[in-house]
Image 1 (cartoon, rainbow, N blue to C red):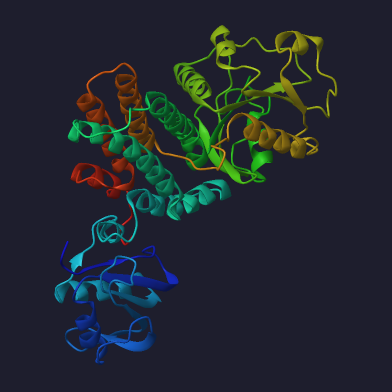
Image 2 (image 1 turned 60 degrees about the vertical axis):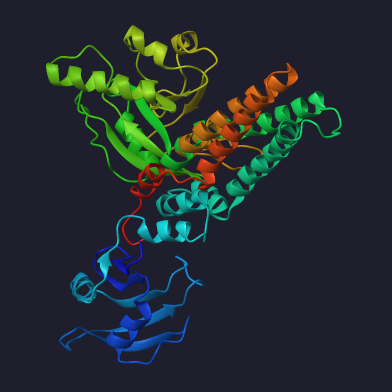
Length: 451
């Protein structure tokens, strides 16, 4: 990674402005050649004409030079702001490659920043999370991780484990010295406290996919109960086809909607009944699968009709903890039947009318309250960890507890010391104190080019 790379850092589509980014040792030389200027002043934006190698003017641009190490990557960098015409961007990049630049790989700018100690690995991962955030909560979680809060916690764990390790290593390296007796209870207590705090972070991993990917809400019910109408009403626009013909929705229709500071993936599923043909049967099977994996379910019931005869296995897919009963068509019948109370006792229920709009606001409030209460949670300081982080933390915790047990039971100190080194190595994988290129390749391959 010693050469100079270049890439478009903004979407490749028509826009007012586009940004082309360079990083590497040739940035200053390229600026002088392209813009016919002396060595550019760092962090000063200048207006110039971009001339390609044949002297042709490609665009009027703004360029800014960043001198290492005071740049995003820690290397010399050059940022060129041109008009957002994809043709202009393509021609500028073509010229840069002819001048010796290499096309940047996905995440290569951030990878260079990590390798040049501008950020730890958890912060580097947070760059991608910030770009991909789809709700205020996920954006805030990414911001906190990018600011280094997760890294600080991990370094705190590492420091505390290193303190224990130093005590153990001292007794190994200097057995004949007049050292004080080992305080096994203090070591065990410290290890238990560290592992307990680790577990709090590990527990947040189950919330990360929901926060970052959205809450999956399935809309289920019998044909003609008003599932598609409910979806359209929640979205505020016509997205799903509404028809009096039963079985109109045969596939799962997905749309996103904001839920407070979060967002949700609404899944309108096929009506649940005995299918009349093979295509509808396949749609119902798919609906049952989506319902089984949903974080939350909205069961739509027609309050003006008798209780539908749902498949028996459907009842195993819902519970009071993850399902809201939505009584639709209350403009026709304002009172739920006693059969409803017998079929779904204790379930939260909301009365709505898609025709008049009555109850839709209350339904949105119930969804938000339901999400906050049951699905969106975090550690006390609202730091979330990914599956990769949780795996490394779990391995560190297990190794720490194994070392503590050996010390408490007068086991070999050398084995306890080995366990502690394993714990430290596992924590190092989170912040990047590791030479494992496979881990780095896996992380940065998910980035967009230009970042």
